[in-house]
Amino acid sequence: MTIGTTALAQKRADEPVQTIPAMRNLDPAMVELGKKLFFDPRLSKSGFISCNSCHNLSMGGSDNLKTSIGHNWQKGPINSPTVLNSSLNLAQFWDGRAKDLKEQAGGPIANPGEMAFTHELAIDTLKSIPGYVDEFKKVFRTDKLSIDEVTTAIAAFEETLITPNSPFDRWLDGDNRALTSMELEGYKLFKESGCVACHNGPNLGGNSFQKMGLVQPYKTASTAAGRVEVTGKDADRLNFKVPTLRNVELTYPYFHDGEAATLTQAVDLMGRLQLGREFSKDENAKIVAFLKTLTGQQPQIAMPILPPSTDKTPKPRPFE
Ligand code: HEC
Ligand code: HEC
Image (cartoon, rainbow, N blue to C red; front, side):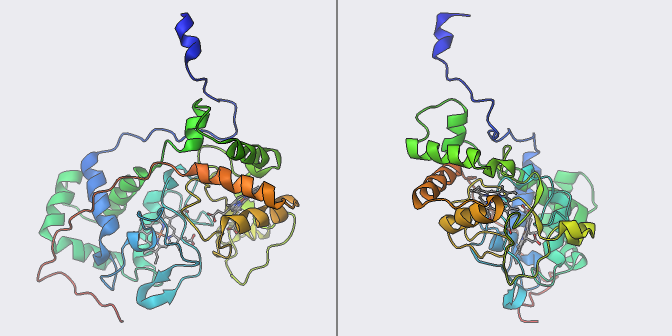
């Protein structure tokens, strides 16, 4: 070892939170196709709603609505979680009913309250567009074009939606100037008061299902029951996948019902409901300041140009 190495930043390896892991090697052509599909409203009955409508990549991968708006202006039952860093989650959806991004991606296309299409019609649509047929053939090296290839490509694109290099990650990497003293005090409070029991790991969440209202019951008009819908076990009632706190500054409003409009409210409720603790105004502000250091580099996305429809492409049916 030379003397020079002592000047190197010391990584903080013992924290309950880790930096975002590097992305898996992905086929760039498949990612590009997945991006087109993510932005293509022709996968919906109306021809108007794409994945990006509710997971807007200009707004932290969410729609910033309490609950989403689906086909024909239907009010959705639940808040749309961000797609950013969702590849790091143990499962997808608030109740974890999809095991991974590929399984998840088939859901919204055929959900009558979301894109309101069918997988068959989505495939008919894609097959009627020569630009897509060629691209699928190149990427998958087969003439088969089914929902399987569609969801594989979308999932590959979603895997690229990670947001590294937030101020907090730079601090974890040893840059002492990456956080202000207020932000650092917020992180200490976050650790010491017990938030990290559930919001830990590289995604500060996404790795377990936990009860909403652990210490004090959560009162909400929402009928979402959480994990019990998947397991059938009553103990899982109101258990939700712990949401990631990465980019949480961008993904308001908060909770599965979108009832917390601000981070101040969300932190206050988390303190009382999950930990039985009332934070002072000052403590709350510190935690909020810390949470805002979790905003990472947003994916830089060039808008894809989609291949045009043809005479054979099924027509949009926005008002049916
Ligand atoms: C109409 C709005 C809407 C559209 C369109 C939509 N989503 Fe979603 N998405 C949601 C909502 C709401 C949820 C949460 C549903 C739940 O948990 O029950 C969700 C959940 C997800 C999740 C899970 C994230 C997590 O952390 O659990 C992913 C990933 C996702 N959507 C990707 C997509 C993709 C890919 C498409 C396009 C094929 C799409 N969505 C279309 C509203 C939408
Ligand atoms: C017992 C586990 C647990 C603890 C402890 C906990 N949380 Fe949570 N947190 C959750 C769950 C579960 C949700 C989702 C609840 C829901 O949507 O109904 C959540 C949601 C949140 C959200 C909203 C995120 C979003 O995108 O909707 C924020 C912000 C948050 N927690 C911050 C904190 C802070 C700060 C603390 C410490 C004061 C904390 N949490 C303690 C489990 C926990």
